[in-house]
Image 1 (cartoon, rainbow, N blue to C red):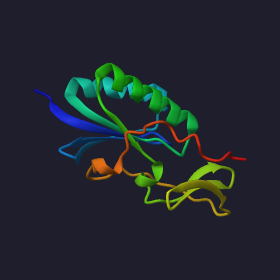
Image 2 (image 1 turned 180 degrees about the vertical axis):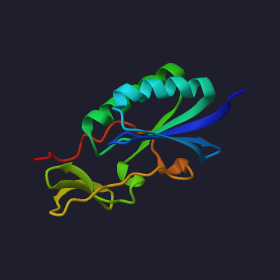
Image 3 (image 1 turned 30 degrees about the horizontal axis):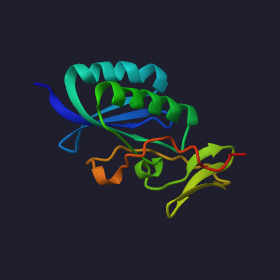
Image 4 (image 1 turned 90 degrees about the vertical axis):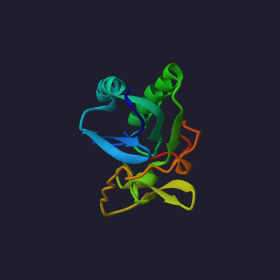
Length: 153
């Protein structure tokens, strides 16, 4: 019988990171420079051969809106078809609340629970990392992408 696992995805920027968790502990990491639209179907085809997936988790923004849309549509479809619960949290959870590049010198920042854009003159790199342990309570059943963020411009 295959192991039951949870899968966490960070598809906001390159590289894409996918974490496989057994009993809430990270047991496998998949990292890819490929576009999410190319890699997600291949990765999940292999994961379904190897594991029973119990829950799906992802970062629903901010970041590349196209990457977030693709991940959301893909994961929501999997959730419906395979009856796997889907959960989300914002990207700041995966980068210790560091600013996230928007466009030009604008960055997304999170102050308290509000996400907005700020101009930052020195380029910053937000490095995303998968947590070593999964805390279900840190995620929400509200999984729609964070499109309500102020216009970038």
